[in-house]
Length: 114
Ligand code: 5GP
Ligand code: ZN
Image 1: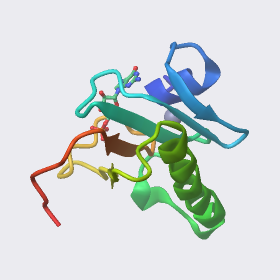
Image 2: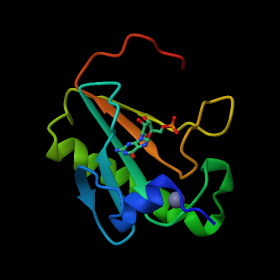
Image 3: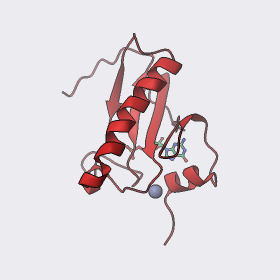
């Protein structure tokens, strides 16, 4: 089976501009940024989307949020604020089928959907 783009990034087969890495989680700059700061935070393990999560993933997903806070500190947008977006499935326009958290910062975001 052809491996997904983000699994290839985890393996280093596709280069990325890394922001954070540990044994379970990787964060890198989005190749097509939608904000001055646009980081993608992913589990290294291949999970297709949010809807595929199981109770076994609960600790991992919790950890992703504390990693996001570490990135906010490191990249200096802790105080100015940021937005986290997860697209899940067709109607949300998910393009890469490997769970990822978009972290957007460095601008004031006007359009609030929720
Ligand atoms: P989605 O639409 O699936 O929520 O978001 C996928 C995101 O992955 C997009 O913002 C896109 O720019 C980013 N992306 C796709 N391929 C690559 C890649 O090879 N490298 C990086 N750094 N980002 C990618
Ligand atoms: Zn993958």
